[in-house]
Length: 126
Image 1 (cartoon, helix red, strand yellow):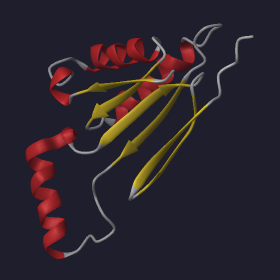
Image 2: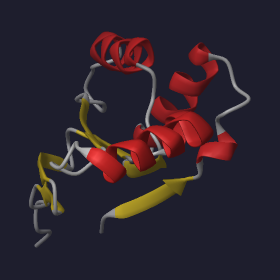
Image 3: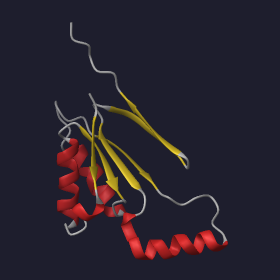
Image 4: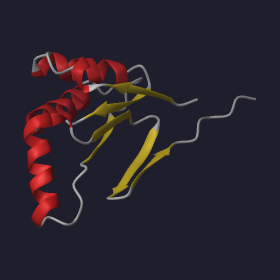
């Protein structure tokens, strides 16, 4: 069974970077796939990956990470102004970040219109 846990941005916005990253790692270590409203700062993404690599062991095999931004291909005129305006108002709340344990998530594919989360098949019990 695959468990998805949605984390609204307001649940992490008041946390410092280190606590934000720890909270997300702790959820992933429970074998849950995190759907985070918004995105982390680049430094936080780097820290998340670094910490995950340091904690790799028998039970925890690392993470898979993908960020989807709401921006379309058309970067001209009104659409660009609207994206810039909402970007200023919402900041890191735009987009979606998907973080999953490497033991469950095989691959995350993304394109402007969809996201595909491919999971590994579990071992069948006899």
